[in-house]
Length: 126
Image (tube, rainbow, N blue to C red; front, side, top):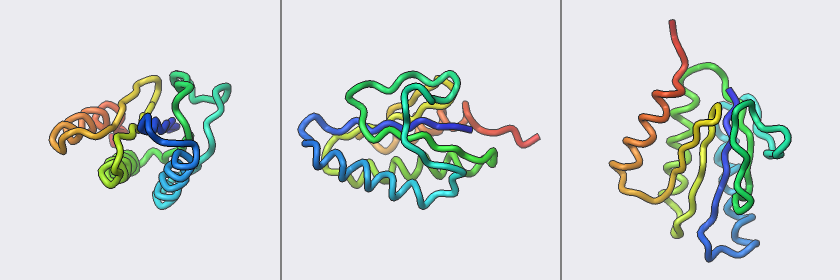
């Protein structure tokens, strides 16, 4: 399964800060059990994926194995990363044209949104 991630930094972030943010996020993503992590190029997006907004930076495509545990681990990593940031950055997650934007929200709101998204894209174990 291919997942497109896009980072939309807080409007006050300068170019140097944006690059640091994107680099740190990619570093955390490399700690996951991914099949691949590659830069997003608009003409090579996964089938059905929306184009990345021009203000989105550091967009990457992740290839996840079919096992059901990788997507929840990815989303939890993104939630944790966002929770540690001092500014209001957003991360978009797109699978088969379905996008969820994660940003600062209450823990309960984030959990409900993420759980619904993961359920929609969970793998069939039958």
